Image 1 (cartoon, chains in turn orange, red):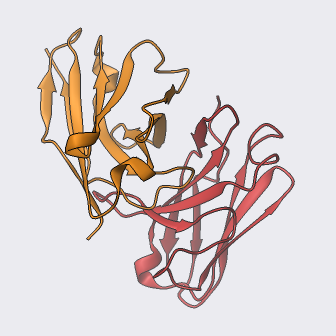
Image 2 (tube, chains in turn yellow, red; image 1 turned 45 degrees about the vertical axis):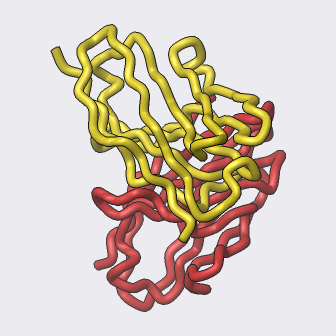
Image 3 (tube, rainbow over the protein chains, first blue to last red; image 1 turned 90 degrees about the horizontal axis):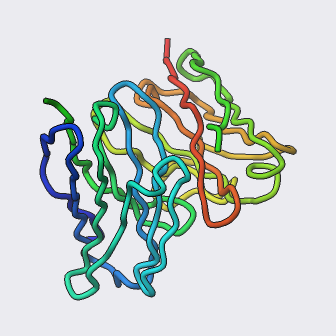
Length: 116
Length: 110
């Protein structure tokens, strides 16, 4: 079946980087966009950016521009989201979701905790 | 890009209908028929309920419907059921290949 499986929880120190993976299966990876959405504890969903899995083009939210990098490995049908210069307020669940402009398939979420 | 405006909470009794609004601007909701709605139960990933403003994905109950007027999109749930109790988020295309989510609405079934 169509699914997105994300990597496991991470604990990082302030200033570090984290890279979360999202492996797609059950569909042609390069035919769709992959978006990243985060949700801080008790807070709303926040769109971070997306990658065209076919040509690798990316677009990021202004809020995360300069700190987030989304990449993909077509041979592994996997998308990645790397967030750098982590702050305490980056503690959140990070989701990948299949696009393009509505998210019909979601990953299970990856908890990232920023703690000293 | 500011979040789209949604009521913090709405409530209704079983069998009733409720509507959740999602207000944006002429740069997002008002300019594109690309509003989607998501249902999220506690501790779970969101689930797509409506896309392109009013279309339902396969498997979503026809009790859920979407519409738009001007800069405001709406999600209506008819025949409320206990399992509809969840958080609901709207999301709109905002131009230049960007998206924006709403603030989220907590639906309580009384």
